Length: 321
Image (cartoon, rainbow, N blue to C red; front, side, top):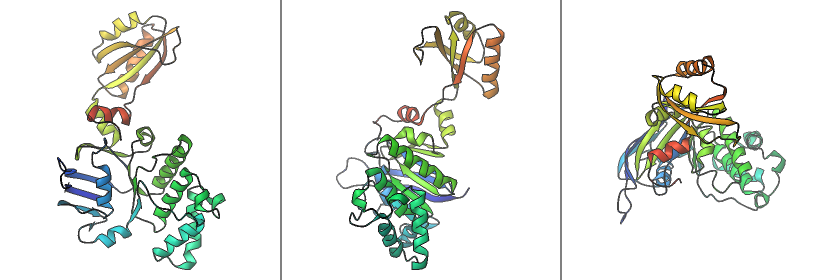
């Protein structure tokens, strides 16, 4: 698919800072993607998002949304953008429906269209039952969903979200994740920064990992997993002691390493081995078949998938943010 957001050699420096906030940053976001933009504290995530949103100037490079440069066509870029900052103001005395109708008017949407657009958005974010309630009465999760609806009022090309899950309880995070997934299924493109990596793991189609203003990895999750862990890992649960199976596995040509692992369920009759395997899906299937054929009491055989959080920790030195 074509890239709708393109960042080329982006450099941003703050006065008196010991190093540039962004150093020759390059990235592309394809249409229909959910792009997870993650990095440690101070990596430059919010700086990048504010530049995309035309709120911050930069020294070198270019940022284009829908073919428009933020340098020369900032008004066109804003028209194509639905921006959800990490902290945004809400008019507490307005009802949810009044709030969205106000922004629909700001975007020049005709009065006869506003009501249906607002109704659809309230339904999308699950706020129809609270449509006439004042914003001040909504929970933080509801207010965040209302902010997302506001960002969608004008049918933007790109939804730009800076830490949208920050401060939300687990239920609100799940609700937000489900809405983002629904938007992606509707063909929306989403660029999202977050420190809640487990939530992004389920929905991200692309990942960019930033550290000290530089991109250290970018691509589809499976591409990055192959770069960081070129081999496959499987967890084998056995009934009884693992010694014989471990010795047999160590002799197989596709096994790079084999080691005991603490049982995940703490069940004493079970023992577990973690193996690094060189090969593809057929190799894993063949390994399982061979274990069973050789009489080993295999209770479970599962591939251990590298999580986004593990990839992040392997590729960066800072803390998660």
